[in-house]
Image (cartoon, rainbow, N blue to C red; front, side, top):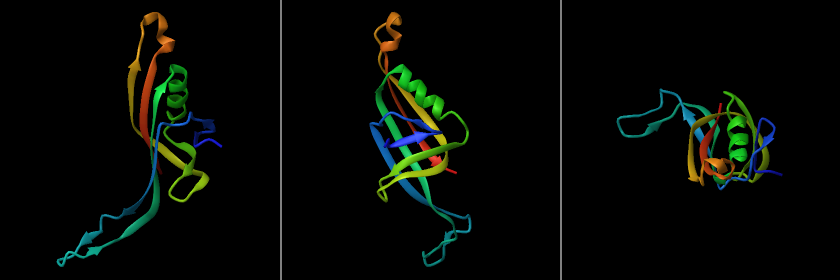
Length: 123
């Protein structure tokens, strides 16, 4: 089983992979005069995946960027916070960062290598 797939496309094994769960509180969450937190939770356990690859080929880079291009994604992934395989959530892609790490010359573009990273955030 792959670590992560997006829209049914199995992504290459990442170099970096971090899963976090966050709680979302309403704007009514505040601290009182004694400094005690008064929470108004709206939702718990919202997933965020920080993921990155090093040394991708142009073909791998295109596979990944095409898979994460839609506004809403179905993402199946391994959750290291619970040890569960095949968790599937509706997510969107956060800011993307790509970096050229190897470029020989114009005639050998296919041999270039790229680093890519972004976040996938649950709706």
